[in-house]
Length: 416
Image 1: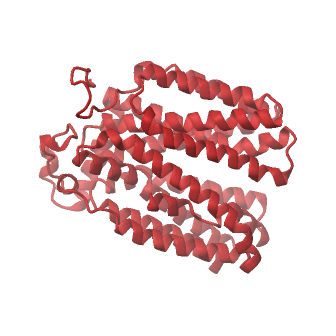
Image 2: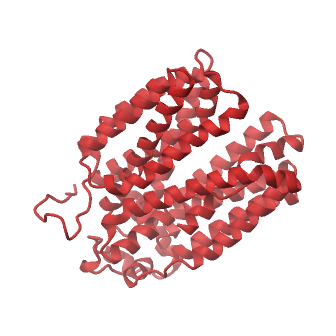
Image 3: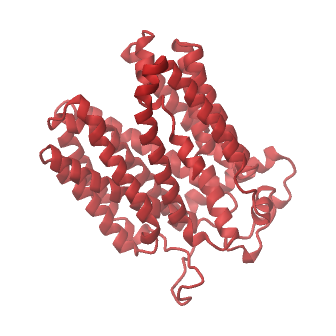
């Protein structure tokens, strides 16, 4: 939880665009930085996931934190388009290094202890910890700026990342089962993973050869194994819908909120998201039909809420976004349950890449639709897509993994 908390406790987050503007960047130049950021993440998302299936995941998480911190330090030490551009490349690389790595690390360690059924609960807690860190860092940004300008928020952010690297290195060392997998070994049948390594992987000599093998194994499982493929698509779609929160502040302004009110109103959506994370553990055993119903409810709350007046809209959107967060965590947990091959981080990264692509599609839809509609109407319209995805859950969501206290007669997942 400390790692997740510190990962989001970055006080430069809410003000870095102001730093760019202060140093004379135009709107087009700032937008180009965001494009480079996204492109870097796209480029490294899946390859870095494959590395997480070969080398120490603790080391990759630590490296991600350090690389991220170097990007923030570069912004304040070398302000200007070139420094900002390199900083975004480092941030995109850091995001790719962490994406899939933390989830795979958590699941495999729980599986080695026979506790994989607790994955949704643990990830829910860490998600909430990250949101709390984000809220606190946002609150800290204003006094830090008063004390030392935006530059101070950058140096503090660098320091937080360095501390987080040490926290990553203090995470529990990989269990013997996990270490065997990273070396290209073989999981024991009792490890709870339900997987026995492909013998080809045992024969690979160097790290680069094993990386290539894991990359092929992970992408193959994500695209050809029907149960996993469907779970990857559902997870990517649900993560993509988190792009909605980029527009909630604009919706509230459309409905009459002042600029000063927006920060407080959007904090309500973050608080609901944190609550959804906490409730993901108790919801982890819900049926696919129940998850479909919750997804549809989240869509109705967000869509109808955006069509109301300001304060009812805040309540509806916040509740809907909290339910969406709960569904997302449970969906990603079912994906982890469904993965049977050795390349868990690679498969998870494929879902992450899919979510980025889908989110960009949503951004394009908002951009095109804004020529004719306001943000509130656009959010209401886009919520229909969530209802469509809800219809996929009954057939596409894998069942949860069983723990020792559950009825062994419940059918387990099948592979095709």
